[in-house]
Image (cartoon, rainbow, N blue to C red):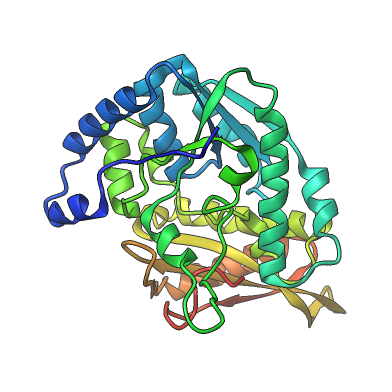
Length: 336
């Protein structure tokens, strides 16, 4: 089958509504267009647990119902207990979801790799392989759905003499050629705030829509240096402490994105009167509208102090906590 692309309203049409974006009209028009364009053909979609793929899935489910199958891959690079929690959310939405445990493959292929872009490529390749293996078990699939949004497209453009993009995304290019499926991207021309508005119009749970953006490669690019099961476990524990504290303090919904970075350095510390030489982590919290730029969030000093103490006391292997105060640009939101 030749690759075909079935999109949604063009960026020009979306821009005409800028400042007066009507999520109800977008939902109605997109569902109608999906019904007309897809008919009774079958669709497969890769869920990530994030807002973009989740809203895409609900839109498609409204349009094609049981003809949509979603594949949710546990890469081993998700937040602590996230696979189980998000699977429960998807089940409550009535989606047909195939869950795949693939931690061993991802962590094995990342062993010894420290270059950020190489990590992204390995994670993207492995995702394609796992997704393709599962999708090939399905009968009659003709369309591949993706949760691509407009910032993904912008940051994947190659610029300059060397043709360097800001970052590579495994849902922008590559996968369609591998699978020989036609592409449907219901949110391709929307920014994150618009995606959330669409999800709200669809009646999706506020907790799911309020989830912070999370990178496609997951904690693989928040674990600076080599990615191992042991280092990911440390990062998951530190991140869990931080996110729980933000929620308890009523700060989670007031910021755009928050997370912890595990640094590839050790520092000297003191515990119970003895010298330690353990890992350092960095807390990252930003506010943004569309992810193209981001401002540093000035969290209360007392809160940061409490979180630092809790992470060091509860997470074995960490003895130093820092706070990232870099805006985008020049820094990106993620460290890798």
